[in-house]
Length: 165
Image (cartoon, rainbow, N blue to C red):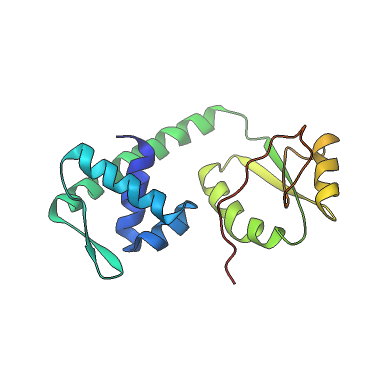
């Protein structure tokens, strides 16, 4: 068992559907379902009963969810202590194209800020893929979000996220 699995359990209990929980975690729903099944198998207990389009927390699952929340709260508190002892002038510069910026500002940045409160995030607005690549190469940005393909000398991490209308 690991912290990621605990986060998955708590999100699933809070959202009551695998789809909504996966969306909140920025992962694919099948990956979340598989992770929950693997954890249930590892623990030897059923945490969630599948019901129609959602899930219901089982009696054993309620205890696990409570303990998982407590564990995650403790980890968050420990991280807070670590953040107090580190400089708060950390900065992340993200180059983005105009088409990707609404998703960045609306979904990704709030989640990142919640996990990394001591990091200031700046969006470097670029006119397109070439602008993002240029911002990375010129060290005006630490990372970039753009449509593929990008030059082969840059490290890419394609997203599995699907755009919602």
